[in-house]
Picture 1 (cartoon, one colour):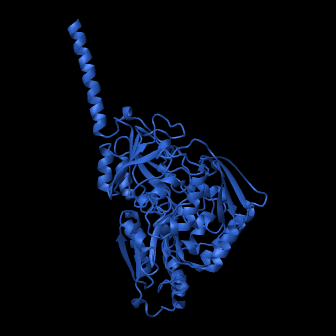
Picture 2 (cartoon, rainbow, N blue to C red):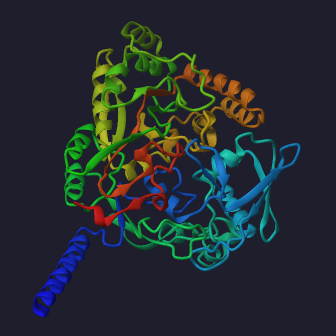
Picture 3 (tube, rainbow, N blue to C red):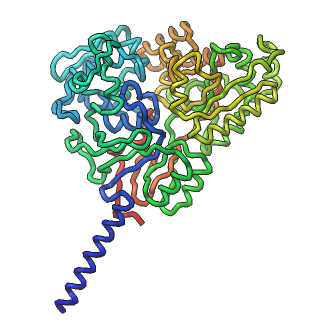
Length: 537
């Protein structure tokens, strides 16, 4: 009997060891969450916050002052409470004491001040949201910070989930003395492209350029984290469909990137245990037209293309998508539902083209359309566009480029193509958040390849954001939408849901349950996701 018992115990031990080995072989023994993505090149929270892939890292590593709920409403986070002056020109926030950065330094009002000063001085990323309004940030005491405004900024609170806080002491210790920003040298830009200075639930453990970023759980995070939240998060730099399907089938990937084609998602859904989550992030997919480069500098040429495009055929390329009707998502508060929008009409297209100064010499002005090679559905849109324009005599050359190359070319008015394809999420949950991208201070970026550079528009959007009363602000948004549509700098294609395949058997993802946070960069918040290795089949 003793021998039989020993054999039984041995068998149980062997089975247990085997299970551990199996779990380890698929990489989930510690509850690892792996996500495919374009490589996150710009993990500095200033330089990278407008890039989808980079935000995936930033929102795990850094904390904002306020955190959005599933309706986009800002909730206390690093800031426990706040108040504003009666004239709306001073916003005072009370910082939670005891929050530690990954370095061990305590997060204080000085770090908040430094983060805003750095953002406004560098002027990249989400600086365009704050530059016209914040005149000074004051650290009143260790845990109290005040933002002094040049003028009222109605949606200020809603923008703060898109304002990550950095470790002042760590960044200053790693400044390179380039002189680019005076005494602040390079303001830590080079350091923050390879290192983190955050207080968030995860910190950077390891990375391999062009291949992956590995994050590990912050053991000293100030918020309680569910024990089933992943211990490690690995961002794997690939969107290649065959590679993604292989990893999902082998349980080497938990959530796919958002750029998988419809065909790829269909194939992924057939893998045992894999489901496709579809959720709204208030995205708008559009074609940005360069208004300063011939022939798209001509408004009639642009309108001809807007009328010639087959919107209904394009929408069908994105399952679950709805037709876009302007520069702001119809799902956002403040969007005018009655606004005019372009529809396919070849007679109107030809009439507009005849008014163009390039009519009669179209063969001399081919149009370059650039789309991301990692996103197969965008190439389909490009080919559809090319075919549609051929019907009215416009030659379009479609070029597929790596997303990082597109980011680089969009930063210069000379190298930006005639047409640049992009999906624009809402940095905060109001129509104005997708209108403000046309402001001149956003021209040298991927989110405004139009190079509008229109002082009147700049004035209109700044006036709208200065309106404290929400109803009045929303009326102003409607005027701005009409102004943009009249100028026709953009072809608005559709409002696609974000669709990602995930391991439904052992991953509990709020978005898949209809609990998505409709703010740019919040589609994957690892601390809110649960991974159950024991449930793998």
